[in-house]
Amino acid sequence: MRFVIAKMKHETNTFSPLVTDVARFEARGSYFGNEALARYGRTKTPFGAFVELAREIGAEIEAPVVAEAWPSGRVTADAYERISRPILDAAARGCDAVLLDLHGAMVCETDEDGEGLLLERLRAMAPGIPIAVALDFHANLTDRMVRNCTVMTGYKTFPHVDTYQTGLQAGRILLRALEGEIRPVMRWARAPLLIQTLCQATDEEPMRPLIAAAEAAERDGALAVSVFGGFAHADIKDAGLSVLAITDGDADRAERIASGIVAEAWSRRAAFVYRAEALEASIARAKSLKDGPVLLIDHCDNTGSGGTQDVMTVVREIMRQGLEDVAVFAIRDPDSVDTMIRAGVGKRVTVALGGNTDIPALGLKGEPLEVSGIVRNISDGEFTITAPMFTGVRAYLGRSVVLDTGAIEIVVCERSHEPWDLGCFRSNGIEPTAKKYLMLKSRLHYRAGFRPIARHIIECNGAGCTTSDNSLLKYRHVRRPVYPLDPDARA
Image 1 (cartoon, helix red, strand yellow):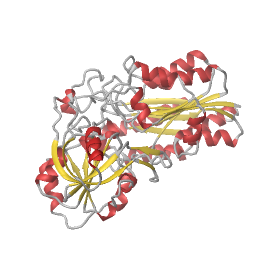
Image 2 (image 1 turned 90 degrees about the horizontal axis):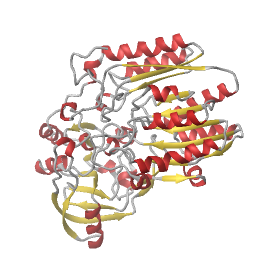
Image 3 (image 1 turned 135 degrees about the horizontal axis):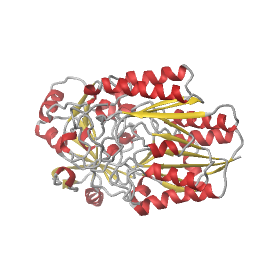
Image 4 (image 1 turned 60 degrees about the vertical axis):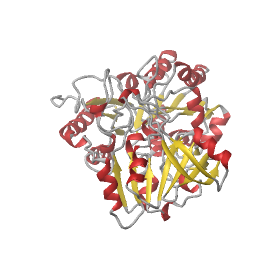
């Protein structure tokens, strides 16, 4: 048998000012053909799971592309074509199945449903081709996506520590269908509900009961049940929570499962609205704590949701209140990195740090922060992730520098990266377990690597385009009414 296996991922924050072009994909890693297979074939990702299953049955593998960019604004038409075209061309050459590692929240310049467009094109080219898809938990599911594939599964964890298992689940269902052992039937349902990301942790209320219901349905014979929290920062018609169920030939049961879990979610809708503490109060509370590490979560400027990673609001407040023994990951500021590298390790510098990016969608102007300190460390910014999320994947921070103010060590890097692995600090010469405070530009993924070492966790409501206050965002395309933008919305 011959399988086409590919990865094309982007979570699009339509409020982000960052352009998602070819260069942004290349910065995180775009690989084609043999290089794609060599770099990702043994990673704990859906792509790696698909490759493993194909190897187990001795299938020939064509891996046309592995491409992923950090969340940011709409994907340019050129970047979309550059990444999706190799997948279409590989399938056109003939294959027995296509297995795709996708996100589910890609918005393009020309189409708000990037994954649906790809699947629709595949189906039109080869109507009978079996297609298995593994999606991110934050997928904004669409009817076009579901109609144009054979099997679709999603992560059940946030932080995403089951990506590999999700790929295995989708791939095994497809293999059983190819053998004629089962006949997968998919049904999906959704509610008019934009869930706040900080309320989506799958091991806590209010999301945990929904995941438990999905797992119970699978134990009771469903082939797969996926709860998608959705990505509320994609201002598209279909943004929001949904549930997809797959059964062996029983469409009515699949419909009941999906609709039942959605009804449960709707009954809990008020609990999915995040209510933030004032930043000044959060930092003051952190200062009163005696033992560390204390995690200070700068969730409004999270690279993993489309943040610019250069908003200095939380760092400024940390400095104003005089916290000491702090490590920060990270400020994305290529110009400051260049200045500090030219100065050299051990030299004192003063830089206008961060604040390089305006955020028109929120009416925010970039505000650099003047910081003086010693250049403590310079690195190439590369390390291999060992945390239980995307294990084995190579991280590329670009050139990275540690600026030591005396009270705070700030990692400054050329490229975006969300901290969920301790290597973010260790690759830059900082031992995170030895610090009183760790400020992380993250929302929930930090938990994959940092929660085990944390004594306390404090969420810091700064500023940025990953704000958890939906009232600050001007939605123009999402279907209305939708909760909580419209408190009187009905399911």
